[in-house]
Amino acid sequence: MEPAPRLSGKIAIVSGAATGIGRGCALAYAANGARVVVGDIDGEQGAATVRAIVAAGGEARFLRSDVAQSADCDALIAHALEVFGAVDILHANAGIELCKTVWDTTDADWQRILSVNLSGSFYCARAAMRAMRDAGRGGALTFTASPHAFLTSREIAAYAATKGGQVALMRALALEGAPYGIRANAVLPGAIETPMLHREAAASPDPAALLRQFAAAHPLDRLGQPEDIGRVAVFLASDDAAFMTGTCVAVDGGLMAAINSGPPISYTGG
Image: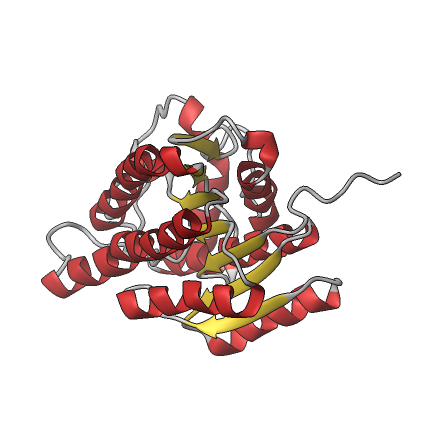
């Protein structure tokens, strides 16, 4: 007899799931038996993610949400409760990039990236944890952080700061959630082939060369794919990871294991 899917009967919410890593994780959760709420500001692509899940035999709903707004995060969790009756998995994935030197980073840039990457993670996690605590059935939080939380490069200081903040937040929430059976972990993706990565590369005079440089920085000598993150996210949300909380899992092609013998990557070619 076939074993039950890893996430059978679970309800998952994924923010920023219209494209890229979020989409890959939403598809992976659904393929492993979860019913999924897709959140994103991009209604067209968010609906496309839902259609892809349904076409593969899964069940999903879309709600337009801007994670920089706490009310939208509350509504995302409330939508899952209304439609599916529970919240078991919250994947705080929504994020934006900013490839600028510290001198060129404006106050508006700083506030915007903090509001999406860090405040958005907090708002979504707070609402999900309340629902999980009140239901008394535990749950799993996963944050899409980054190796930039621990090692970084030029022209990405604001982004790196938000990712470091996400990791610190995750650890704190792991402690607060533990008495209620709520686990919190983070994935640290390497360079994943997504629209965000291509936008980052577009800031360089030679985007194709920069993408090759990104790939070569990984000992596995390739860019990652969204499904590489999705498979690990499913594991972290499943009972197979029942004794894992407060930790980071690098899904980075060996990036963080390598000693970088050359100069830091320049995102803008400066």
